[in-house]
Length: 257
Image 1: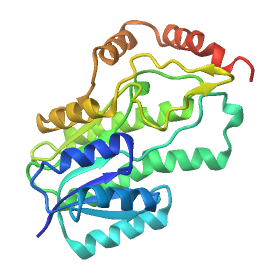
Image 2 (image 1 turned 180 degrees about the horizontal axis):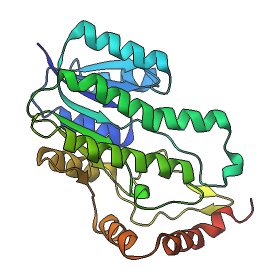
Image 3 (image 1 turned 45 degrees about the horizontal axis):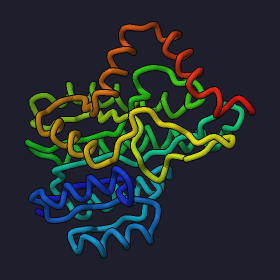
């Protein structure tokens, strides 16, 4: 029986850092899931035959079904499931959100994570780890990123509750809650203004901390002093105050809408 890690959203940013970390684990294969075939091919060229690419769009039910069929056929031992795939709306008003986009975000950010957990847990043994990528934005409501933030609340609460249910199995589930991570997904300008991201960090230390916390069976991983402070403040201050402060900080990026 082959021992594998499964990483979604593996072709860049935080996902690619997890791929690099998994190369140091005792694994037969690393199953890398992403939408972009070319980026998956590049990943395999960089890291070699340990990488098994899957060009799945996890917001689509047919991709989830394809993943399920592959698991049933291969019967692997899953040592790590890292649910990193996700998407969000551009910073701005709800007015620019279509129903179709909203459904896609929810399916990818929420439904696919639950589906992969449910499909993978039967293939896990004592010592297996689940890492689900949530966000600092799960600590409070976030106007002008309202749907993305709401899906990350779901991920955090689902993961922590799942971790309790897994007690006694030897399997742990960790909600990874980074702040702003410096990847290609972040827009650099908005309404002619260069966007400043407080507490911006590179992806590698976030991934390293997350893996370390997962191995210690922690149900949450929070990297950086800044994000830990934001977590604390979200508990101390009323959410209305936190939201008002946030809106003031981004007003120049959205005021012309």
